[in-house]
Length: 94
Image (cartoon, rainbow, N blue to C red):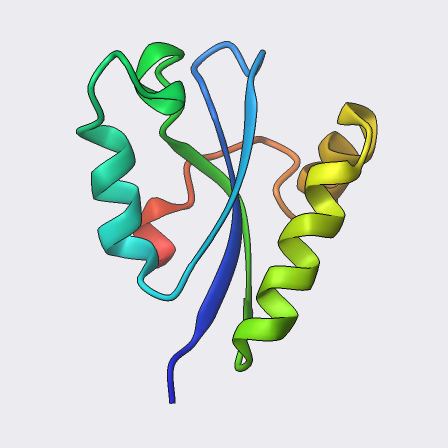
């Protein structure tokens, strides 16, 4: 059984938030970090993991990702601040 992740990345200045979903978070983070400038995350240097959550079921991850993507920016910031108030890079915890 896979674990599915919903995650939020940001850039150095925290001006951009990117919401994604994957079942291999470590691999996906490496892809983001090595993205070319023509991709969204590459163009804006969005690679700092500031939030993630796990679920056993892919359908739950899909629903949650869509939910968070629809949120206002401030709601996403509140979600991040609730678990990671210093906006530390959480990559080492994956």
